[in-house]
Structures are given as C-alpha cells and as structure tokens.
Image 1 (cartoon, one colour):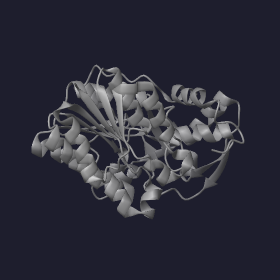
Image 2: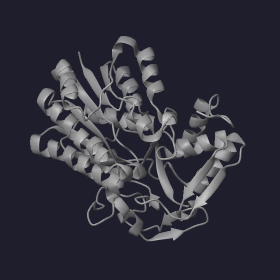
Image 3: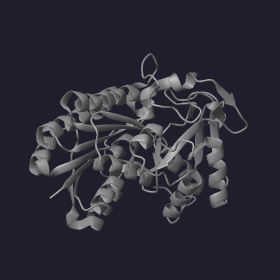
Image 4: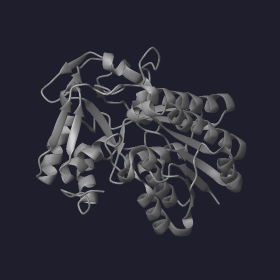
Length: 359
C-alpha cells in the first residue's frame, strides 16, 4: 500500500491534492479541522469540500478531523500508516496578513510550529517520503515593492531588460525587508522545510506560490483574490480595492497546474529544493484587468470601493519565474491562464453565486 498524506485536505490545493494522488492510485489520508471557518467565517468553511471528498472517493480516502498543532494526534496518524506514506503534501496554514496581526500566536503556531510538527513526524515515521510544502511569495516581503516599476494605464510593470522582467527568481533576498506577521511565520516554515532536507537528507521541496486558485476555492475577502473577485461580480457584492489604484499585478496559477508540479517532484524528488511556482508571464493580471475580464464573462458590472491605503505586506507587483522548476522538471507544462481560470470559476459556481445570495 502506498499512501499520500495531505494536511489542509479540505482547502483548495489540499482537496485537489487528495483527488490528484488518489487518481495516481495511492490511498489518501487527509488531515483537516476546518480552521478556515474559524479564521474567516462560515462562508469560508471547507466542510463542504471534505464531505465531497469522502463521498466521491469512498474507501480510497481516510479523513482525520485533526489540528496540526496537536502533536500527539498527528503522531498517532503517522504511526498508523508509517513507512507506507510515500508522499506528504503540506497545505495546512493560516493564510492571511490581516488575520495574523489579530492573533500572532495562533498564526505562528499553525504556520511555523505546525509545519515543524509535520516534518518531525515524517522524519520519525516515513523518512523516505517526498515532503511537498506550500510556501508563499510573501517570504520575499516588501523587497518586491522596491523594484523600479513603471505605471501603465491598467497596471504597474517592470521595464524590459530588468533582471526580473520575465519574473522574480529565487535569487531575491528574504532579508532586510518587511514581511508582515504572516510573512514572517511562513519564512520560518519555509526555512525549516529546507533545513530538514539539507540537514537530515530528507526529500523536501518548498513551493513559493503566487496566487493559487481554482473553482474549489472557498473564496472570502481576506484570502482567495481571484475567486473572491469573481464571486463579488456574480453576487454583485462590493469589492474593496486596497491601494495602488487597482493596478497591482498578481500572477495566478490554477490548482491543476500546481498539482502536476507536485506530481513531478513526487516522481523525482530532491533534498531541500526551493522553487517559485505561479502563473508567471503566461497567467497574470492587475485588479483592473481582472475586473474587465469578470465583467466580460458575466455581463455584470463590478461594484468596487477604493481604499487608498494598501495592506501591509501587499505586493505592488508580483510575477514569479518558474524557470528553475522548469529547468529541473522539463516535462511539466502550465495549461491555464487568467481568462481560462475566471471562466472556470464562473461556470463552477453559476448556480450558487447569484445576486442577493447570502451564504
């Protein structure tokens, strides 16, 4: 028996990891306690997604209602499956800048200490497993905002010829920058995953994601930018634009493309690998550009409110480079771009995200 263990199994990437690795023929163990509902309220709950996994996958999927801060509980799960675990996909996290400031202890305990708990259990019970960690581009902090941007009509952009014009590489420093409390806890987790790979020779990888998105996102204001933007348009909610004139740029990668990258690493793992993983130059948009795309898909206007102050830790512009990962895993191919992603989100939620709907 070969087992994939997924933390945060009810979330966007976690649930897609469950389905993807089950599709590869592995039995899948999921760990999730729906903390997203505690973080962001009932509309952000992932319980519906967990129920769907249990229903759709049947005996191929075993779910544990468990908090990754619970060391004894986590240890009991790893002991149960032991060396049968061949892949650990760690997606569980507190994902919001704003929420982290409200409760930095919980943020750090979930993001940093929770990651350490999972790593140590892998080391003790299934050391040969591929360990795949969902990090974030926020580990680079506001160093990104110091790049020499040019303001265009609908976006900020880097001039051609800049070393990062094709996307920010892993060479950008994480030091001497403002990270936000959330970014700091994710740096701690990121470095610990690298350390277990290099110090103990474990097969670990850090994927520093841009905007990870897809139709299974439980979209809410504080997390899930592209899905939440489409939800606001479809339900005719007011979308708040936080600073930068709505010209801030995000690259967006579909969960399908994320999971094929995870699979590539699982099949040929390395020790202590670090990669940026995002939409890159193929799939990116400013908020203003995404508004126009959403309107063209639904025929409904965006209702927006502009808040002049940007949120601490927000990037004015982020387009990551996938070049390092593509060099090491040349068989990987990115499929989706922003228009494809927005249309799929729309089609998947057309029956429930309607004007006047209250979740």
